[in-house]
Length: 92
Length: 411
Image (cartoon, rainbow over the protein chains, first blue to last red):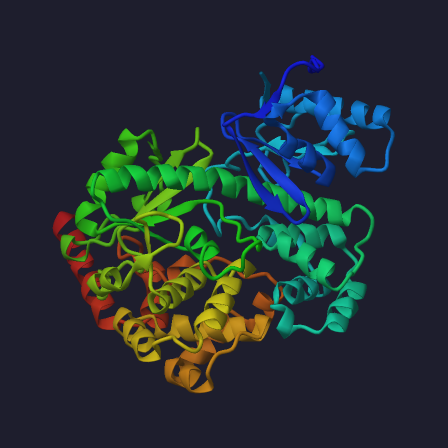
């Protein structure tokens, strides 16, 4: 289910969000499931704007965080898999 | 991601994966209503330190010194109890904000647990707001004006940006003449009527001259978003006396299109009666009054408040609600207003016996509906408390006698 790097990732319309302290609440209005993203997850969410794929998202985070590209990539892919499985983002 | 926990109350439904994404399901806990839960009160014996700390966190920053918060936190022993109480009183987010403000560390795991509680509440708000928009749109399309009561209106006006005012249901007020049309419109839009409203079924015996419907309940959002349709914002069991004025004074809610909210004066009366009806059992309802007073204290038309409260027979409700808000949250209440609102000495004594300051300060307020709502469909024993404790006693007696005569004629 790992997102292919050639595709672009976009937030789905059924996801609505609200800030809560430094975190983000995500609600899937279709099934009522809700999620909390920590600041890094929140940043990844914001980058799922339909213009970037996994590689681009990892590259942005690599410039913003002091971590290796491999570590960032592993975490980003895991999170994106969660978001895809939760039907909150789609691969275009 | 771990395993989901479906079909459990929203406040508990949250897990966390290894990647920092927490999750849960936004569901209606059960077809229960605010104030109906007494579980917490049964399990608590001595919670003074927890209640004290929670209350201080809910106070405005200007009304509590940082070292006072730190001292109160050091007295807390039962952090899990604190989390449960804070969540039941819908103030979990205030604990997070207050402790962040004074850089007060919480024991390991506590902050996360409180964050989860706040998150669950916020998820519910997101879902409710979606359904609120939908309900307002269909009512507007049907040319039925609606006033949004309580949470969603207050969240958008008196709560500072970024501060959380959770709510668990929606309350819409429509004109009594349009109540049936509004109900039909909502039902046609997919809001499912809830047939077993205990309050509605309890209104048998009311004469047509005193039609005092409490509310109808609908569920939107696939059963996850309860919506109460009201024709009387005070729900006292008597025909409201100030309804036309309330509608004339209603004002738009920023960001909610054509939807209206009560003006601050009517809001103050309505919130006071509501918290009184629920036995002062949620701290967030006193916080509403606190913020309303703080944001309008210099512009509030007190003669109007006094007049509406007097005419509706709820002067003592306003007095006692403001008294409690001042006690717990240091709400600014002008002394002369308090003096003018307060009832006579025996009644004041009764209020303090039935709703003791100490119990409410201990966050153990309890629903005592019969003491506020009047329903002659109940026994005389059931109607007596409201007859004694609330105003408009003549009207209550007349409705009660009418009901008695009707019952006699039927038997």
